Amino acid sequence: MKIKHLKTLPKERIVHCPKGGFVSERMLLESDGMGYTMTMTTIEPGRVNYWHYKNHLESCYCVSGKGEITSAATAKTYPITPGTLYVLDDHDPHYVEAFDTLKLVCVFNPPLTGREVHDETGAYKRSD
Image (cartoon, rainbow, N blue to C red; front, side, top):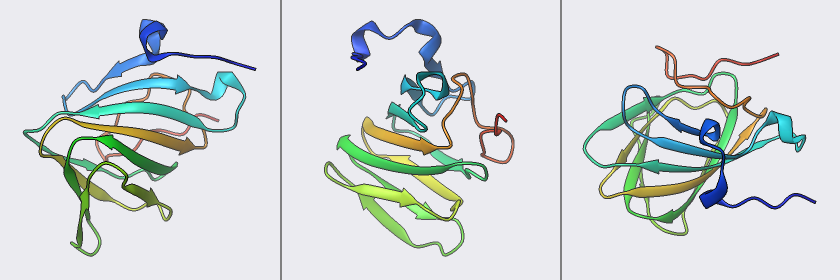
């Protein structure tokens, strides 16, 4: 059994996007041996973020805030509010915009190693 708390996460598990846009508090990583990553991701308003997880599948559950996600493939936009789960089950390229501070619990498969940030294509590199 493992017990973790956001307030006691080691600072190396807290990743600030170098371009701005999000802070990812990485609760579970590959080294935890669970087979997936779980994060608390905070997205501040004021920008539209483009992400495309070519090497990972991601699901995000909104715990607070408001925003929207737009499919880069179809241009269809969906609201994100507390209680919303969005699932990127086909490596979907997408845009996320926060209207106020958006807090998401995110799950990645395969798991992250810990320090990943988005590359120029909006993806995290896969660590094999």
